[in-house]
Amino acid sequence: MGLFLDQDKLDGIHEMLSRPIADLGKLIGKYSAKYPLLEQIGAENVPRILEQGPNVVHLLASLLNHELVSIEAKKSLTMAAAYLIWPLDILPEGIIGPLGYVDDILVVVYVFNVMLNGTNLQDKEILTGLWKGRPADLETLREKVLKLESIKLAFQKFSLGKKKP
Image (cartoon, rainbow, N blue to C red; front, side, top):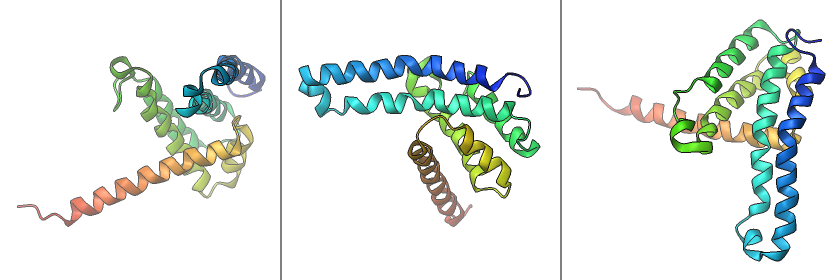
């Protein structure tokens, strides 16, 4: 039993959220044979991209629920969860639709990345053990965050290089 919920209940919620995405994948596979344009535009990748949402949310909830995750990590995870549910953010869902979840997922994955690169080996082990997606998908999400981090560093160097009047 976790702090708030039984882990089996969190896993069941993840399964419930993931099922329609898996069904979409089967449907796209079925129609790709009939409509070659679907294959040409890479429609088969859509379910794999969409399934990261439930994977990320499940991992966030599971880490917050896990009694052995460090207090430091839980503080960061709580802030990421708050950003996830806060209606005003960089890409607001209410204005731009589902694309607005991209920044939310990246904020949460950034916290995961900090945990994976941190010194607390137990947090790393718990995080990788609770991840429901493919290991390669977690690595891909981490790579996206690292690219954003390098862009942020480039902007910082650029702004530090400018002389203020």
